[in-house]
Length: 360
Image (cartoon, rainbow, N blue to C red; front, side):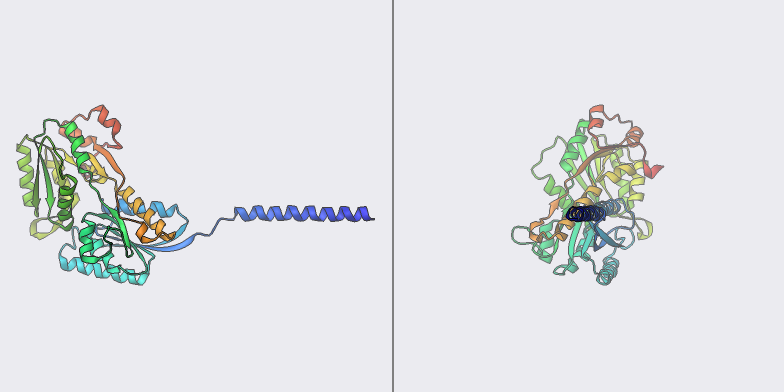
């Protein structure tokens, strides 16, 4: 009787153990619930702009593969082609700020200087994190007006982000390898907020640098001036290549036109290769060089966001230069200009584009 009772007890314990193991196994297979977070992205640009869209994609790439369930909200200020006057920019900023106040995000991403200056700085000192991407203006200049850095340049409020380093020296070096007879290089830069910031970036990145060619800068505001400059460089063989940063110009009737118009005209009329500021410009048809990788810059900004959400103090998330650049060339543009890209250069390229999107 005792033996029979012992067997029964043993079987009960065995089945209970198996049952608990099965339950434990089932528990481990239950996916963890993702934390929810609200994120608002404000663009200086219009929707799907060649500079803003890749940054937005980069931010989404990181968060869509994170442990967060994101509720997204977006606003496109379109300050490059339509809302270009100070009054219209301010109006767009007010709309964006009202939507952000209503949405109450945990993170506000602001892309490019107009969004940073007019929207991002409005939320300094708030509970949300403000993370910028694509800042062309100097952080210390922003700090003089908005005071968000300590004496060592470390964030001490709720804003940090990614400074857009242009990698101009690297571009000049690789372009000179391709065009060693170059005597002059011309940068064509508009007089927008971004254009003004890029002037200072060029000064800082090329400080104390020596090149075998003269470097010139032309500031322009209109399509008429742009066409005149292109005509000039076409006739002067001393210009080996150009740095075309004409991103926003006045056309007839004071209408502002952007990259699709300015770059298309360049591709149809200029006989000199141009450095691409970013890889998306090369995809459109600009010749190439060493370019900012905007998608990776967006990912870098998102990584800062994840750190802050995990509890990293703001003073341990310093402003970063964009880390990733791409060596890129547009082979269709090269063929159009009769340029043969050497194999050793092609081998180090991250991307070789086979067509010019603006001319297709």
